[in-house]
Image (cartoon, rainbow, N blue to C red):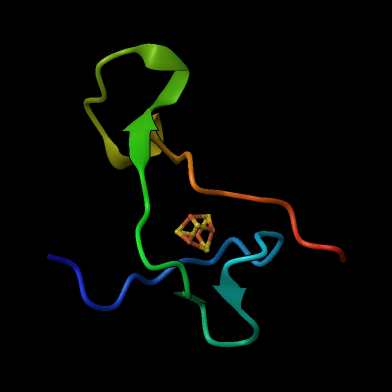
Length: 53
Ligand code: SF4
């Protein structure tokens, strides 16, 4: 199980400001556009929620 999830998506409410870390207790990563991924760029975090920026 992942303990420390690093993430640069600072526009997500779960992102810990300035640390590039995810603060969510659980994340759900899905295939981008529902196509089977063959590279990291073809995956997305479905736990993303927009932060009030
Ligand atoms: S929920 Fe997903 S997008 Fe948001 S900080 Fe965590 S890993 Fe990043």
